[in-house]
Structure formats: structure tokens, C-alpha cells
Image (cartoon, chains in turn orange, cyan):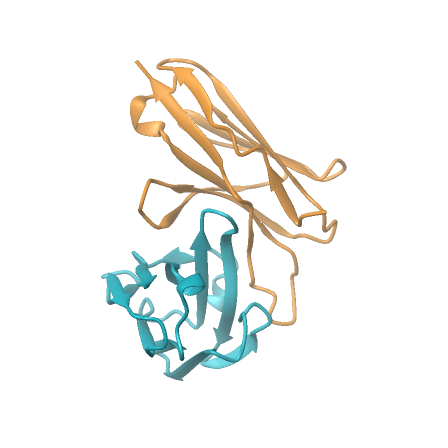
Length: 113
Length: 115
């Protein structure tokens, strides 16, 4: 089983739609969780951290379910500029040089007119 | 802040040649990571350093790959000899180990083509 699993997509949605991505992780000891965004031929950039209580940043909402070991990202009122690949990222360890991150292979989103 | 700086941005070389990729982390960051990204395998961690010391090099594919971090502001990833299967985008990232949030910031990457 992969450490971090995502549906690769692509998710093709019309502008204004709401879209949700899920991600599962295998290491129950994982401590930190993030969503990164990667545009075509660009570097990954942090979109948002994911907290146990859930967190929202404008049109974006991230949720963490520790019991089921999954993370979700909800995008409301999607824009053309949201088209990108969304990477689910997990920090598997807390101590002992454990700032290594494990990246999922990404979910591709295409927002269309 | 200039962010993580990588050079060169593009490298085209012939099989068997030595390739050296360079990275300057964000000033004040004490962790540095080298990744490789391909369509088939996604983003793979090759090696990372904390305070200039290599911590985990289990992702380095084989002895042809080596990485150094002689000081806090510079790191290199060397491939010798290079092979066509090494063609990929190589990213360097840095983070603040003591920052608590463990957020990594990526450079723009080096797109390597080995012919």
C-alpha cells in the first residue's frame, strides 16, 4: 500500500462548481498534513495546512479524519485559475529528524468555462 | 526573500557525462531536501539534510548519485555518469526545522534531459 494515495483524476468541472478531493495515508502516527498545489511545469507550493479541527481559507476547506486516516480538500465556486494538480502531503514522524514529507502523486483539476 | 534558488534551470547532456545541480536554500532555513519528479513516479525524496548533515539518503537511486551540503547556504546534487533514465525535474526545497510547522518551500527546479 502506498504511504499516501490520491485519485489522479483528472477532475473536469465547470467554473463555479464545488469539487472535493480525498487522500488516504497509511501511517497512523503521521503528525502533520498539508495540501500543496502544483501548476504545469512549476514547483509545488503550499496551499494550506490541515488541522484536526478543520480549517478554511476563502473558497478552500481542508478536513482531517484521523480515525479513518484521510484528508479532504473542498474547493467552492471554482475558478479557471484553480486548474492545477493538488498534492496531498503527510509528515509521517514527529521526532528524530522527522521533518521528511511524503507526497501523494496528485489529483489533477481542470476547471472549464 | 529570494526563495530557494536552483541552477541551472535546464540541462541537456549526453549519456555518460557528469551533471551537477545546485541549490541555495532560503536564508535561515536549516533543512534542505532534494526531490526528483517524473510522470511515472511522481515526486520522490532523494536525500535530505538537517543543519548541513545528511539525515536520510535512502531515496538516492544508486551510487551514481551523490549530494553534498558544505555550508548552510549551498548544496549540490551530482550524477556521474548520467543515464537517459535520469531525465526528470529535480527540485530542491528548504524548511525551518525549528519552525514547528514543517512547511517546505521549493525552488523552480532543474529540468534535466540526458540524451
